[in-house]
Image 1 (tube, rainbow, N blue to C red):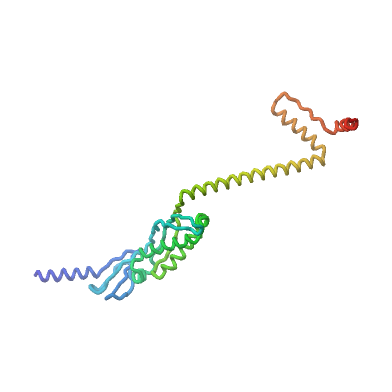
Image 2: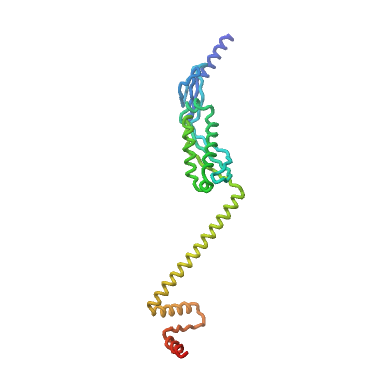
Length: 250
């Protein structure tokens, strides 16, 4: 009786080891006597006990944080850059057979690529051309990880840490740029005002009655303020003959 129970238990253990249940996002890479058979799943998978071996692989998107990398840019500025990487397995068989640990391999590839790309551009481009750098990183990492059955969907440069002296220099540069723009705007305003005054003087010179109208408008503006001062505009044309006679006598 004990022998029979032992045999039944062994049979149940073999049956249990032959059945695998994979979730919707999992695939099982099957090896039979060391040889790759295929990847199966999801659902129930039947294996040959003691002959088949299965390696489970997740097909979900992996969000990997690329550690900060110390990089010297093209214009010899030392910066620290980190990024975030989004990828997933599209070929489970390759991810198991072609590389020992696809997560570690992809992480190392992302780090070396980040150092290489950032080292080939200047600091100004690094700060202003984020989209271009992200696209370049994604293309390079995806190209090199494709033989592993990995698809890189997105790479984003997350943070750029600058030295303190560089931050101070950039702050001074930004302040000087703002002062330059303010002076240019003020100068353009004075130029436009002078140009408008010149145009107004030309119109008044061509039409003397415009000056009288301007005198009257000034009186209206003074009257609105309710002060006691009364101004009588005296046209220069009325006193000009007298001034000419005085000048001739002299």
